[in-house]
Amino acid sequence: MAVTGVTAGLCLPLALFAIILIPIPGLPAASGFWIPAGFYFVMTLWFGVWGALGGHIATTIAMGYFSGYTLHVWLDGGLGDLIAPLVCLLIFKLAKADPELKTKRDKAVWALAVPISSLVCGLWVHTVHLLFGIITWPFWYVGVLTYFIGDSLAVFTVGTPLLKTLTGYVKQSPMYIWRRG
Amino acid sequence: MERTFFLHVENDSPLVNLHPALKILALVAVNLEAWIIESPLALLTLLLALIALFRALRVPLSRVGRFLAFAAFVVQAIMFSYILGSAIPGRVVLLRLPWGTYVSDMTVLYAAAMVLRFMAMLVGSTLILAVMRDVDVVYGLKSLGVPFTASFTVSLALRAASMFLEDYFKVRDAMVLRGTDFSSGSVFERARKYARLAVPLMVLGVRRMLELSYVLEVKGVGLRRRRTYIHQFQLGWRGYVVAAALVLAPILSLVAKLWLGVLTFPGWPLR
Image (cartoon, rainbow over all chains, first blue to last red; front, top):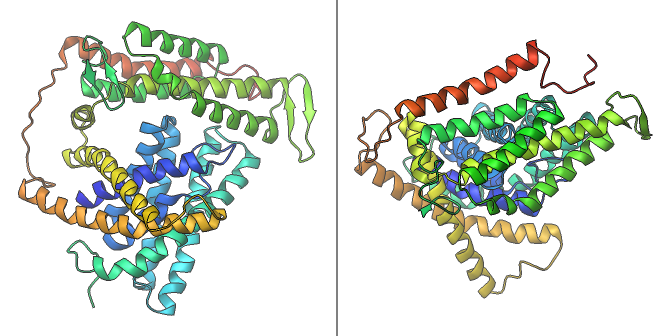
């Protein structure tokens, strides 16, 4: 509960900044640099599904509660932001990679997992937008591409230093989900 | 005056004193209703009715005014998307675009319907959210069967957000005092500067998380423990009538649209 609440609290103002500062014209609730993704990807790799839930709650509340986006835009974006970090966690688990990114293999897994997760999330969000009539086909491509780039850039820029510098510190926490070596 | 998340609302406003579960049901119902309706005329009627409700329920209409710039941004986004990127058949093609899409008379009408749908959702959601308190979030979700832990987590997120907003400004000001200039450089340079804010923010976040988890444990908040509640909200027969109306309205609209053909968009998809 604490992990989810704090992750959501941390990501919520960041989500607002991202939507307001770097919006994409023609695409509701899209940002060219989705800053909170950097945080909830990292929180998910450290604390598992609770971190991802925090990102989901933050996105849902930020888009709806404070910015006035409509219900299906909230739920769609919120679910997308739940799926993306979980895909990244799954890839890390399958590859048995360490979030501290000490070895070249861990870094390679990170470099692959982030774009794959962002792409999965972008496909989900914009396909649902398309089915609801919020965007049209030509903008589906633009949406998926900007989501892919905007999320991946933010996760690499914000998440990489966090994983490298703070994983050692977080490993001491009882909530850290990986077996301590 | 009653303090809500966003503003002060008159104590005697019927909406403020509505049962928390009804506020959440109303939020869902108004969005569903606007989503089901396709007819521009019906959407316009819904929008005007919702604006009239602000006055009738004594909720300051100025709340919507704060969203005007945002609404204008989304309206241009919808128009931009439909005018440049759709192919909706109509009686007259007004403009053919080189990438294969075109603008017909129906394109303009459909885009206008989408704008009306968005505005109805925005105005309706704002009406409900303007009277929402943190107590309403926890008790409303709880009354609707959401587990206490999930309701409490949402409330915790809202409270934590204001704390982190303060932390963010503190850390940013400390960095500015040490010579960081957030307003200069290219977009990527500025993004990198902001990214450096993330580490101290995350350290504060992890510390808060640990403290909070100990506090919640000490206070006996857990997934399977039974709880007692300080506030008691009674639904009453009027509440049940409102709840039934909120559940039935979208269902009836859906039936009317699918089986009676009313509330549909005239002319497209071609019927």
